[in-house]
Image (cartoon, rainbow, N blue to C red; front, side):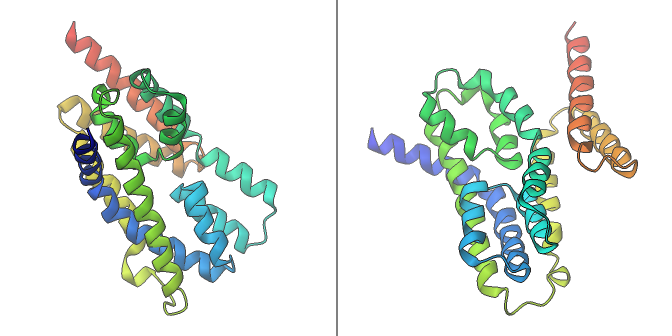
Length: 230
């Protein structure tokens, strides 16, 4: 039993490696920016432990640095992370056999990247609980590690842009997306969703462009797949 549990945990950690490669440099960049914004080291690390939301943490640090009030910070980060409701709703049917304490822990560590990996094997979530939880824990551990390294280096680095760390998050998403594009319909759906998101962003929908593009692209992709199956 113990051997099976350890094997499942190792599988989850191994599946999380693509995320780790992206989270460490992005967490590093967050740690550097937070250190330079005046946020204390304790609060910077606590955000990575408690909040664990890359885009929300970057936005919050920027707002804190500009002197924005707590209410505006909370509201802004809430809107940015509304997409998590869609992700959780899509995985919920596959977690019906989980106890509430495991569901709470799983949902707390659910991110865009872990969702991409979980959704690719959603049908096995009920049977692979330890593997799924291990994947999430490994991802957050790498994020916290990157944050800690960034805090250490914040006094030594003047500008992170020449290092290309700001592209690491986009590169990680591209890698995860490629793994999901296993059919022409999915490829077209991904391209169309990207086009919609870009157009909405250019039109000024800076807070909702991802959510709207996701719903529109997923709806079209599902409709095409159902039509093909007929």
